[in-house]
Image (cartoon, rainbow, N blue to C red; front, side, top):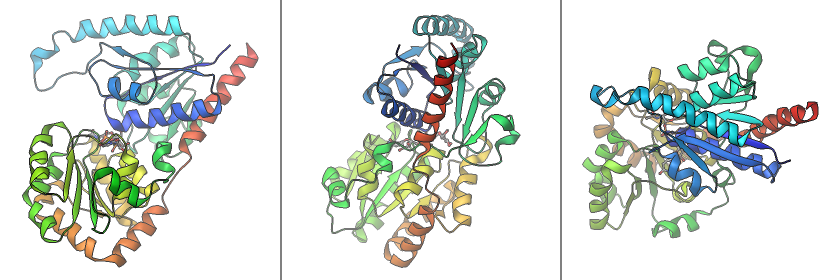
Length: 369
Ligand SMILES: CC(=O)N[C@H]1[C@@H](OP(=O)(O)OP(=O)(O)OC[C@H]2O[C@@H](n3ccc(=O)[nH]c3=O)[C@H](O)[C@@H]2O)O[C@H](CO)[C@@H](O)[C@@H]1O
C-alpha cells in the first residue's frame, strides 16, 4: 500500500516553502507516496501549495486578533469546528506520519495525530522556537532544527540538526544571470539589485526604496522590487516611469530573481537567510523589528559577525539603505568578500536529510505492523 504523509502548517512563506521542499524530497525518494497538506483557510498556503502540485485541505482555524477584539467572537466556534475537521481528515486519510512546519494549522493536526499515536515530526526553522512547537515537541518523534542550542526548547534526544530545507529549484543554482535578466526584461550590462521583503513584503524596505529611487536612477542600477500586496500599486507606478525598475507583489520563481541579482536587499527571516547562503549573494539585511524575540536581528547579526552580510536597521533604512547598497555596488572587493563568506554557511541537502529520516521511521513502522 502507498505510504501516506500529512504536512500541516503555513501562514507565511517561511513555513510554506520549506514544507514544499520536504514534500518534493519525499516524492523524489518514493514517487508512490501520497502527500496531503493541511493549512488555514484564507492563508497563503491555500494558493502556494496547489501551485506546487499538492492537494491541500483548509481548516477554519484563526488566531487571536489583537487589533479588533470583536473579530474574536467567532474564534471558539472556529477552533471547535477545526478540531472536527482535523479528526475527519486524519480518519479518512490515515497518514503514516504527520509533519508540522509551524503556523495555525500545525497545532491541532499534530496534537490530534499524537493522541492517536501517529508518528509526528516538527520542523523549526528559527533559532527561537514558538510556543506551540515547544508543546508539540514533547511527544514528537523527531524535531528538525536549523542549528545548535535548541535544547532550551525541545527534548535533546529528539533533536536533529538538519539546516533549513531550501527549494531545490533555488538550491540547484542552475539559472544563468543572463536567463534571470531575460525573465525580468532587464539589461544584463547593468548592476542589478533584488529587494525582497519576505513573503508578505516589508514596509520599511518599501518606503526606503521609494524615498531614494533617484539614487538607483542616477547610478544606473536596476531594481527588481518585490513589494508585498500593500505597496504594489505605488511601486508599479514607479516602474512604469522608470525602465530600470521591475516591481511585483510576489515572485513565484525566486530562482530567477536570485540569478539576476548582483546584490540582494532582504528581510532576515530564517528561509530568506538559508536561501541567500545557498545562492551566495552579497546581501544587505533589514531585519523585521517586531519578529518574536527580535529573531530577525539575531539572524542578521549572526551573518554580520562572520562578515557574511551587511545589516541596516529598519528604523534607519530610509536614510541608509539605498546609500549602503549603492556604495556596495561600486565596491567589487567587498561584494566578493561577502559572497565568499555567506557561501560558507550554505546547507543544500536539508530537504533530503529530513525526508530520509521521516521515511526511515515510516518504513520501520510498516515492517513492525
Ligand atoms: C514577518 C514575520 O513574521 N516573518 C517571519 C516569517 O517570514 P517570511 O514568511 O518572510 O519567511 P522567510 O524569510 O523565512 O522566507 C520567505 C520565503 O518566501 C519566499 N518568497 C519571498 C518573496 C517572494 O516574492 N517570493 C518567494 O517565494 C522566499 O524565497 C522564502 O522561501 O517566517 C520566518 C520563518 O519562520 C521567520 O523567520 C520570519 O521572522
